[in-house]
Length: 444
Image 1 (spheres, helix red, strand yellow):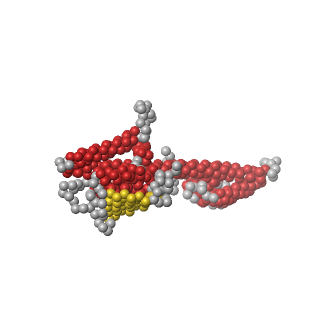
Image 2: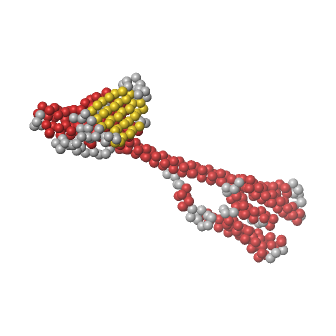
Image 3: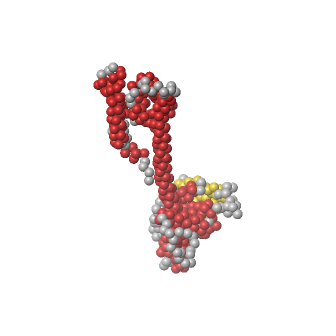
């Protein structure tokens, strides 16, 4: 883990403009040494300039103390060092000031200009001072005039170039480290964001799969059980009056119960094994897999199994026949030429009709119902409409529970495929459910 920018900002607890206390202590020590140096050199400066010694010492101490502000105002420190160069004081001030200036974030042209000025000033002072010393020293007449420029240039370059080059190197390295640290922080934030988005997508996918499986369970259970309840009520009503009809209704209840159990067993088996196939012998234990991944894989496998083994439009006649056997008057009409569609389209069309018939059983028992199916060029349309229910019979009135999710589930199915779903009461007091699905022919 890397240290973020906020953590580094929090760690900057130094006084005033210093980031850390140790930086303040270092600058204070350098300023103290520079003030002592300049103060000592101020004695000779005062003697040469004809000033009181105290004035020269005070001037040197004040100028040397400028190193205390080298991080805050590096340009001012270098200008002060250039200004006191003619007084032959401030070597430490010049070296440290140039290093700080070169290592700072200031433009390179400013650093070059000030370094050039400092070099020129040092070279001129060294040239003048050496010439004066040689002129006053009569014991060294053998030294030629070429020595003076050489010494001046060497002194100027020796005082100016090393701190500038070292400062440039340290500044470049510092910027490189900062850039790498910022990049690491940025990558860490991006990874955190990607992890959060991945978790959100996984949660969304799990919710989608749970909703889809819940729709399938609802369709399987609601329709079959609704018919079973209707047949059970009819069986109770005719058990003594018409034993043959009672036996027929009992057989229908048993068949529907077995069908519902078979479909539920298949779906639960898929959820339990995590795939659509059964293994003859138990698999060897593998490496542990995250629970979320197992749940997501199981949900996806269940959805694939439902898609591959679910009902189709070919089972629509049987569906209508079951409703008719339960006592509902259902009229089925088909327009257009039937053809093969994609599995999800046929399953959705079947489930819409199935759930609409289930709602009629629940809320309008005994009502005349019309089921219309239209095969069009690039779509398939279905409509289930029932008339107002007759007056309820006290002997045959069956109140079926409703969870209120039937219409929601139908709309979700249709919208997933890009279709249109409309439902609502009719002017005559009945109810109508209509859906249109884009349905290009399935590939052969």
